[in-house]
Length: 222
Image (cartoon, rainbow, N blue to C red):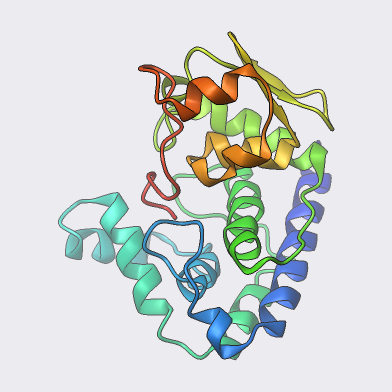
């Protein structure tokens, strides 16, 4: 995926997610997401903060006593106090932008919008297809990162296989499924395990040492 295709995909995903959020009822905005301790509104608020620069991030980090995870949580909770229509407008306002948060690459906005889109959609029973090619690019980045996801360490001992993209990672008993679902797994959303197949799923479900799937939001970024 070249740079133009990457940002076109990010724009499309942000726009379609804003459309979904605009349809939600007041009760749905208050529902828990897949992201630990975050409601739908916190997830939406977090996504509107993608352009946070150093001038805003550094004071927030100081207030969080140097904890990046706490800073992300606190800024999301603060932004979530805005009315839903303001959060939707904030997300739409990112469409067309090529900026990304300080200290991140251009792939992190793709990871954020794909994963957080499912954090919202799945608990609400909303259909939100994940483009397999984009999911493969995002999953490759997550697999290579180490902090904050530690996917290779958490999923050591299993092989991941995307049935709709050919994406593969790891070694051992196979865990197979849609690449979008595997992206959720590598970012710590163990709620997706029932959607996956293969002998490796039993290994992860049983909590075999070295093959823990973690839980949604363990990275502190939702």
